[in-house]
Picture (cartoon, rainbow, N blue to C red):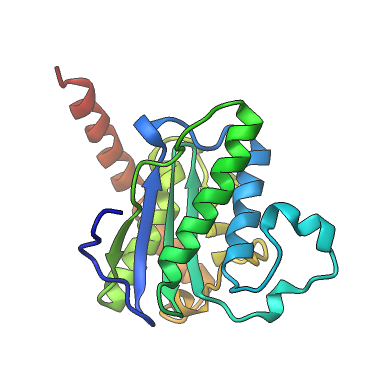
Length: 216
């Protein structure tokens, strides 16, 4: 396993992200997205518990009674990559969480799509959040991904992120948003904070594609 240059420390928050091998899609339909969200929720909790693939056989098993190893503060699932803001609660919690969701989801995806081999590109990336200012700006960056990439014209139309929970339009059991929202007077203030950067985020994405398309 490659050596991780960024140590993952308890009670610290990290921006964690990874993408598909060769930038290929890791989600192709609603079933894929929903399966990944269910996996995220399940593996936040430590064992002992049944394997996720066997959970339907143990419907009465209340795994939520177990302590969490990580806390998901916000997330966004994109067609070929994902982003999380994660707080590590227990030793090696983030590594254990990411490894388990990656292994579980890759098995599901490969079986469903009749493929073999890795789905995600090597070791996940993790950047430590060092201030409240950085925290809210990274959360905004994560939530802007769908509109910056022109997948939707309105962020309210994107179902595969925690943004709708942040602005009060749905309940999301996957993430806990009180840490970030506590830095704003209201949910409306957070919504405006995000939307203020829509045009800027789209312009950066356009420039990035122009640069990539111009490479030999």
